[in-house]
Length: 429
Image 1 (tube, rainbow, N blue to C red):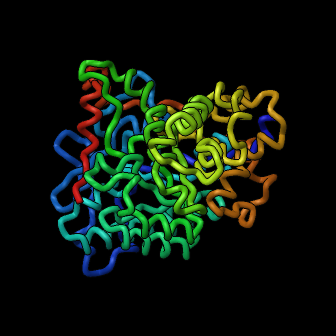
Image 2: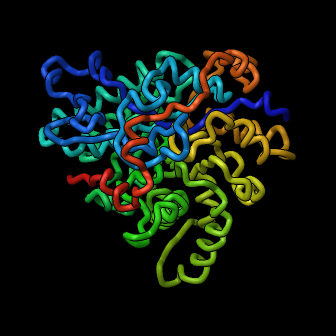
């Protein structure tokens, strides 16, 4: 297939929230209590809510920045591309990259709403979280029907409230929810615990995919405090294997046979060996561990129920026939530091060279549209959202680097893994 004929749907992009996001969605009694974006004395922006601050980490929004200015320092909106927080400019950045549609993860609230979970007033926390979801669905995704796959944040402190929110947003057409790869690191029960059953049941009933993004446990891989940040960046995607093991050996997949998870930004190249390993463990140890997959192998359950996602994974594509091709998805990761923007089609085309057209279509868009119950072609014509067609509309998009004078002065060469973890506070029940 010619690269210009690809229809690209990314199941993992990110947004940086704009300052006016709550204006149309928060109940009047809470309008003065919502998170507010303020500028600090050092010139960086921070969201403030009940006295707690949250900043946007630099690596979260480096699209269009010179690589020598990458780092984990806080930023401000004026230092990043408008497409990070402005939906109209985001669509233009998607067009120039040939991306038809995308699912977006949050920034300052963290991957499963930990920031809102820390609210002392839980009624306020729930109101703010629901307002966030409504903004995301109605404004961010609603501005361009067919171009953005909606995703909700859960009120993680209360499984019954989580279930109610899943059902509420499903009625609005949202069939994705972000959750934690390891909730124990947030001081909540584990993926093995029935504590989450109301949430799982609601997701199962509403055909809602539970997205487990790397880093959604508010932690990063640290081998030692003096390890260079390259160590963490290398290991972080593959660390999702821990969530994969938790899921397959927990009773969740067997007790909720219609529930689907996605391992977001975890890659796929490691999966074939993982499948071999879990089957061997099952065969060798089930007599005393008492695992029971009802006549199936663990690998079969994994392949049927867990969606996989990759950005740049040539070995994984080569190994695709060891996987379930109906569950493999592509992701762009805009505007994060691992993103292939604005050359995603070129990067992907090299990895899909020689792959049959029907398999390319599954990986690039068909699987994503099916899994997330997203009828893109109800709103846009397929021929209008190919790589070639979208790029033809985006000839005027500026792809030049945006350099920050402030970052040039402060430098980023002293950033360590420890600095990055300080941007990831944990939640308490």
